[in-house]
Image 1: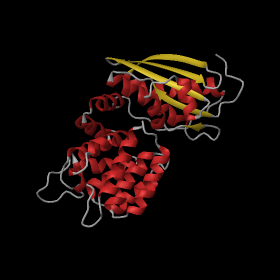
Image 2: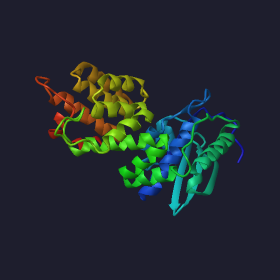
Image 3: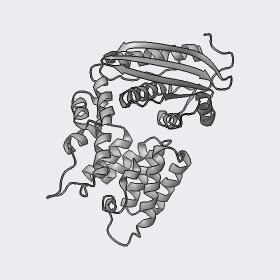
Image 4: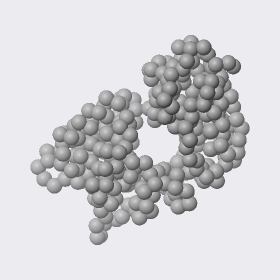
Length: 315
């Protein structure tokens, strides 16, 4: 189908909701990678993938999601996995005209998924914008990428650890899952792990993986595992400022540092960026409860409150 006459200046890419965890993880991965490939174009505003995915979870028509996100074009992605094959489908929709711009499907081997993501993004760029709006990005090894996605679907930390050992681009997924599990486990206060305490799972591997992880993941690892609060704060400040999770996690860090005024500021930023239906909202509510329940009258560490607050509400 030919490109529409009116230029498209904004884009959101999100997955089609699927009840199968593995299909859902693959759909989210395709949507997130395509959004990242478009991010950075001077002529195009791209909604962060996590925000778009949160709206997709509302199960609204694609055009309505586009209106709520205030974008002109939406792209839906779905992936169905069968053995080592992946059936990927994508549709680009003009939100204003409520019309399909183009749609396509690819049947590919799982090991070729990264290549297909780029091929699909180039095709969308040509159909929707009539030019290349993509940026160059490194890609994960073809033999490792399917293993990472399957491990995420199964929440298999050991498999992610093995992937991170041979592929730097898998480090963020491994470190992020490790710190999530640690925070939910009620493990003894760490940072750092002290004599007689149970260490976090794969602690040393997680710390090494943080060197190749996103700024937010690195900040959380330093905060929870290494005790290097200066490195944690530097990473928080480098992290993506439009992500509400960054501000919420930074607020928890600031509470631990006994800086409640700054924590309240970060929580205000987080609340401005998030919506109550987003996963980040539960983390924001947790941070608010920690901030207002604690009277700062005695020693305080981020883990000391874990016995009083239901940390599962953060995830």
